[in-house]
Image 1 (spheres, rainbow over the protein chains, first blue to last red):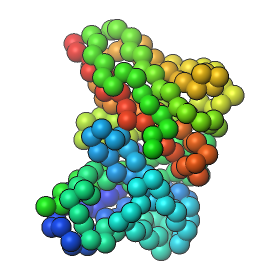
Image 2: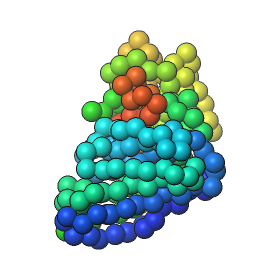
Image 3: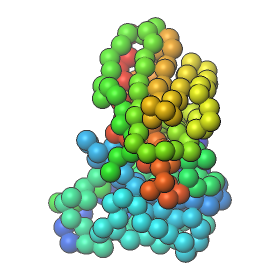
Image 4: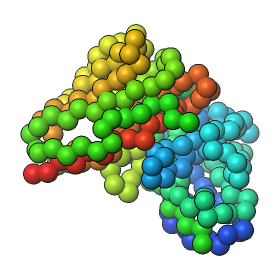
Length: 114
Length: 112
């Protein structure tokens, strides 16, 4: 398995509170991604990073922010959690961008917003 | 918006049978990838096929790509119970920038 971990693995939080999810890699890959997975929607891209301090928005970025201060860490922050952000969040990494490189996925974080 | 759409949404077969899943997409691509997801786990990469390739094999997996029809198929031969999982196609459509766009997946159930 690629060296990619996510923390926490499970979290329950209340509406309106900020939440930060962490993705950590040991592969020194340049690209990192955050996805959410919901029934009926498949996997949707939230934000991605193509280098330290270089990030871009994905399809469903509203209500989320990211930061990458080190190659190995990519943080996803829900600034004020809402029930619609209840989901399973996956981090992924790849050596390069686009479809030329396979992505390696972390185990996921199950987030419940009550 | 989803670029790739898998068909069927769900597929149930017996061990030993072949399983075929299809993926259709809307805009031109450079590459198409297939991933597998076991229940409660992250996605695992299966195979990548480039737009100038028509067919690719990996073990019991066979992927075809027809760019004129904007479609791909994943064939799993001699299915096993361990193949039970969801399968996703992902494309690098231009509007995705440097990211992949995933379909909603096909859920495959293989019974023994």
